[in-house]
Image (cartoon, rainbow, N blue to C red; front, side, top):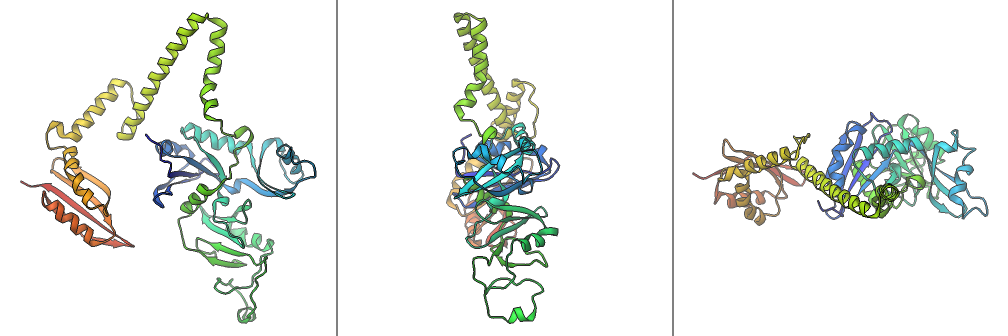
Length: 430
């Protein structure tokens, strides 16, 4: 299937295997969410394999599992900075640096902004993705996918935690129980600026004060989910959004990725040539040139046949998700032919395909209507459509066009937000 370059699959990994995994497909071209959901745990990542096969994938690493910090760069160590960084952090870290992955996020003068995470964490995430057949393009700390503000922090709550982005390369994941203490430790003021939500418990003197702190230290916390009660500092509400949608947009724009060193993705040609290296060496040691040529030819044909089998099974599972096991290729062919016969009505006009062929030109005349569900009942000879449109008149236009060829039964229309939803039942005229 052709890869969709305008759509991005974003997967927020979990800290533990039994925690939920959020995911979302975002289309930058359509500027909307294509699909989203939540898996019970990391063992269900294979449910996203089909989405990953069609589009680029970005994985979000939980900020709670890493340290985003900065360290002073000694003079003269710039060229070997990546090798020196772990030792510069050794005194600040409680763990053995050999067990930690240290990644340089950004260099700013004599300061290095780094992400520190256990090797075991990254290896567990990559192993779970690999088991599901999902190849990621980058791994980004989730807190660093929140919007960036020149003056202030951005914040959103997800899974009982607050993600806070302080700067381009700094952020944390905080439990609500100690969020207030952390905010006070940042020396952010509790004075209230015009148009900014006021901290609970301000005394009357502060409420009546006309002074507004506009200094660089006057950090405003821009929040996209409801502000927790009793928090210090100044909070500014932003337009609410789905947190995963917010993170997906940030992940798409982000140039950060902690996949470096041993975790750096291999180039395509290195991935494809690696399985052949040992085969070529073994063949050259034990076989003559003529036998080696024959063996390589046979192997190539077997691999090509296996590739065809793998692709046919992938398409089969996509078309018929109820059939998970495929014992033989003949079984696959029988099931596909049976499904094609069922949809085509066994060569008569009773199946689903003739309906779709007849409806296609009608649907093209009302492009404003989006169909979200289709249910065909062959026994009753009816087709039920669930649709939505921007205006009621679009449903009336569709009903008029359909009535020329079908018996139309239109259900009650309801408006939710800026969309009108309704159902239409079609039957062939006697």
